[in-house]
Image (cartoon, rainbow over all chains, first blue to last red; front, side):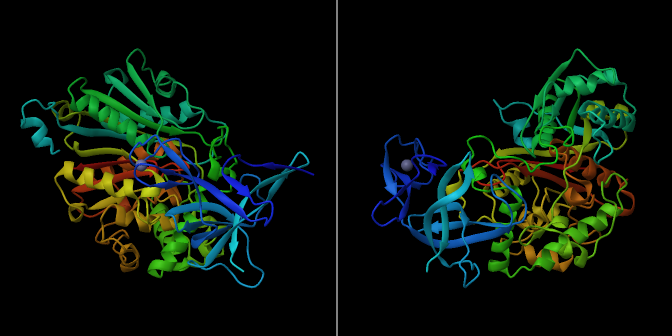
Length: 132
Length: 396
Ligand SMILES: [Zn+2]
């Protein structure tokens, strides 16, 4: 089945390990890091932005289980905010671990996987799941 | 900027005192057979009648509408016999009505016109989003990943539980309080008392937010007639003064460290208090954006009705009930009136005016002298939630 990224240029997958990484960027002047990447720095209006791969792990800041359909997701599904050590808070779908429920502050890891299917294509994006 | 400074300092724009003299509201509910123009017209006619004004006395109009908007002021006013004057249409998410009100206030304060009308109207059931959640914009990354307003307030609620020990029962209490108030308001879409159990047992929307903790999508309109203080006296013995008007947009998201503390909500309140020359303790009642029950608790803190982090205690103390120290949403709020997006920012002003006149009936705030009407909302990926915020403080 064909695989398409739901958005290009904001995540990558290591072909050897299969590990996913979120790709943000960093202001060369003030150091502020952004995800998704921005065209210029919202802090200082600096124009020089450098690529910045985010740490693969972060801490769960908040979460909710949604019981209404949204975007292409059918309920129930989890979404949450994950604080990445670089100072970025990422909104993402969450994947529940089989053995424990979500807790604020728990260690999370990014995973690249199918979000939904569209016209016989796998739409690939990022989710966070509890660190095993 | 105090009004007095604006008046006195050389080189500053001269600002006249402005009063609200007429208020009107349409029915609120689901009316698939009625146009936005017809709902708006009902509110305008009620506002004109409220102050005994002839339609042709209106000199300037601002109207706000978010969905399927086109020439809203002209369409509404055509139906009540008003044409051929300066009309401005604005959109500012949930703060649209407040933006229209502020537009008229500025026109009159600056001396350009003496009499104007602010209209907020929304027909959610005839709009392109009828029956749906408010959809993400085409380039809204988070929208595609499942972000919705209920999801956002579900995540805020989780933080409130984690940081302050809030419980689902606390959130339900906000809804119970506001539905009690709504049961006293003939304009409310839902004039029905609820119990904590009913709220908690209603359909789960976005944990821990249940259906009865969410405001309904509603059709409705509100209108307010403003004029200069000298003209006001020709129409009424009870002009209600606009002592502060503040409008502000949200910050970039990375600046908001705590999703339970709104940067724009706090700042716009500070601007309003400074302009009014008053403090939060001087406010006798508040009408605000309670799109979700748990939202009201964070807005207490935005408006400095209590210290940061003490919103939950303020709720539990009962201070924000009718008859409490600082009643919040005595109208019933968005939770029981419903939320016609652009109408709500005018409707909240109308409610404050009723209390300041002593005409709020069973939900009257005793001896109210100063009231605050806040409205905010809107989401954009990369910005703090609540992208536009407006506050008006009124006094008798
Ligand atoms: Zn910078």
